[in-house]
Image (cartoon, rainbow, N blue to C red):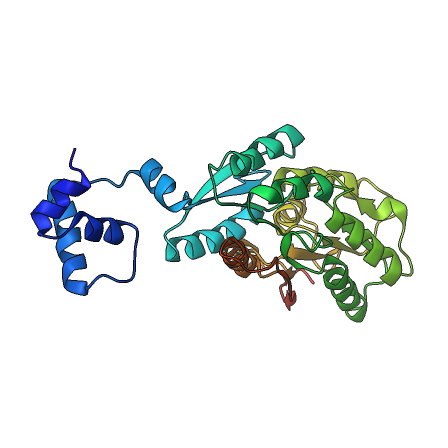
Length: 319
């Protein structure tokens, strides 16, 4: 296998110049840089990542911690992260946790063992107090509201966003409203429940459905919902994915929307638009891109950052 001395000889430059080109050092002429890159290609040189890490102190990798890799909700976050990472020549290490604390700890241990330069956590069960202990080894960023100042956070204000959606339902003539949540005790679900009981005069505990994460859960909810004698006239879902499962099952049973029950989703996933789902659009791809940027900037000496992005309404035929 070719080494940097072989490349230097082929390109007729010094070993130092080759090293600078490999490490993206700015002070190399365009002509020499092209000669080195051409020599690398001709000799089939592969950059030694371990050697690069030792020379720069950087791995060029961030770990992305998420509960499920096959859930569409996280796809837009990851798309934004991937685009930003590509622009900075970084790689993403994806770590699925299924909300298991031991897995979250293993993922963040990559930071402790210097296997990654930073950690981006899209959803978690770990407390912020424990998460802060990893800050000694590199930057950590989350999508959660309420993170301490030492942890970067890029998020939407779920309380305000849910209040906006509930007011929209009220303006559309829906007084009896229920909500459908994922994890009942997550910070976002707690904020959404608070918005529900603050905004809806007819709010009822039995009209809060929790534990619905997938489209299959939405199908299951449709059976539960239709079996009840007293039902709300509208449902506000915390996930488009669950809302679409619910909507599909209603259509199979010839239940009309919004005539029989109105549906409002939350995410703004593109697939929802294909089915006419009215939804609150969260800019998840922008959040992913910004998460990468604040983590990268913090790694380079900037202070932790907190940013809140705005949720907007996307109309559809279900409302």
